[in-house]
Image 1 (tube, rainbow, N blue to C red):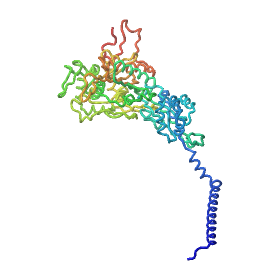
Image 2: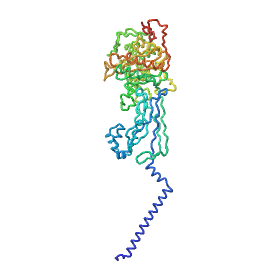
Image 3: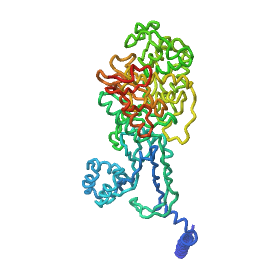
Image 4: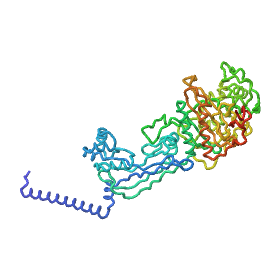
Length: 585
């Protein structure tokens, strides 16, 4: 084969250069044409690419709605605060500023450095959330590179621990976690908005571009609670718990006509404004989540069933001698041998034997049916997270002693709210109504479960309980007629009942001539000799009811004219014919 000549080699090299130049020229023309197209004709592409690097969509927090009492007084509000955040790479580049930053944030410098190092490659980290604006601005005034502020909201509770069990609390992001805050979180929270902003390389917002969606603030929620009555109940319950060295205590006040909860308090309590103290045991709303055997406060319902049956009247004699009776292999006892008494005094003297004889004379199904209609054994559906329904076994599972125990409040359990609702049904003449923690605009009609005639026969018995002849003189309210019943219940420990541990209970309503308020007080495990319901729980009822009736301007129905009162006598709170006397020397 003949070797290529020098001229042919030069020709081939020239052709390759021309081809390379042609390709480079074509590429340059293509790039130029593309640049012209993007810069002049189709500008959206490059704009979009730039926006992706600098334009961001950020959330705009919505202001959380307030929780108000029935009179419009704030119980929970969201206040503006500032959170301190940092761009970790920038902050680490000025590590020498960390000690002064840590002092201003009131955190350990080593801990701060460790946290920043752990997020050294991130673009964002919180240093401290929800600071008071003044304190946050002092941090910003240090001028530490890479440290910035962000506006947020923090929940504040003006009544502090007075309403803590009821309201619950929100987390650091202002979202409901417990209580009313959780139950009504959707309407309180609102809908956050969105806006487009330009951020620099450190993640700081340098310019607001446009609003994508306006935030929708949360709606306010008006509760049925009256803050004044709530405070009265809180103060009285706390004082009783301290005085009697009790483990816990609860009280519920209901409006008889509407079923609204005007007060619901528990002890021990915690200030929800101090997040470091938030503990589950101190936040538990015992009035709704804890169940108790109610004891003798159930006897009025047993007697009501007897009266409703027509087999008994208030004057029907009941022989309780010799102060105890055998039921199978068990024994039901009274604290004293009351002998031959009438049905009224079964209530006044709180006779277990008398209640047992009335209950066993009627089918178990009848007693169970009444208890079910009163709402025992199922939640009230008040809408509070964690509400319990208590325990009411079906009558087919009752033994004879079980039947007897139900008549005086053992073998059945309920929350203080359920018991208050049942007493409100008595106070309203035998009509039970739904209960509500939200302010009611139209009172519900309710359901009749006992005849008004039957209930009115009970009133003198319950009034006599709150007299010197009964067990709860300390529940009396000056100027008002009061009806109610005490209970002193042995606590369940393990599989049996404790010998020296009790629940002290009082349930009642006032004024008796036209009942407006019903109330239940339960004190858990009072110490000392004064553990009876009439000595521990009844005084709490008296203090709260006296103040509440006056706050609501309820007219007195037991006013004594001192000018017509005999000298040397003191007016009795009882107006019942069953009371020992209306005056005492």
